[in-house]
Length: 180
Image (cartoon, rainbow, N blue to C red; front, side, top):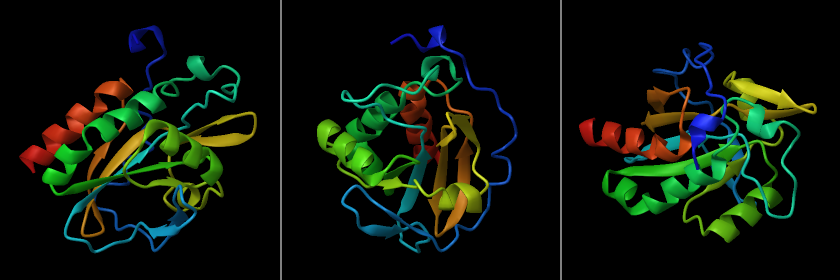
C-alpha cells in the first residue's frame, strides 16, 4: 500500500510529556479477557504501541477513516510487530498493542492475524484519560493517535510520535532497541 496517498499525521506536541514518565498502576483486558498490568518491573522492555483501530472484514470502517491523518495502517503495523516478534524477544523486548476497541474486536483480530502477544482494550478510555493520550474522534468515539512507548523498569525511555508510515515503524523500533 502506498501510504503517501493518505494524509500524514503532524506532531502536535501531545506526546511530549511521556519521556521519563512512570506508568500508572492500571490493568486492561487482553484479547482473552484477562487483566494485564501495564505497570511492571520485568527485566525485559515493554513496547507499548497504541493504534486507532484494526479493521474487520465483517465491519465497515468509520466515516472518513482513510482521510483522517494517521488512521490507516493499523493492520499493517500490527502484522509488522507479529512478523518481527522473535527478533523483538531476542532484543529483550515484548510488544503489547493497545487500542480503544472492545475485547471482542481485538480477539477477532488477534485470532484472524495470528498475533502471538497481548493486545489490550482501553474501550473505557481509562489509560487514554489517565496518561492524557493523543487521540482523535469520529462519531463520538475516541481513537488513539498512533504512538509507541518503550518502557524499561516502568519508566518510558523512548517515545515514537507521530508514526508514519505505520508499516515501516517496526524498523525504527528495532533500530532503537539494537542501539540502546
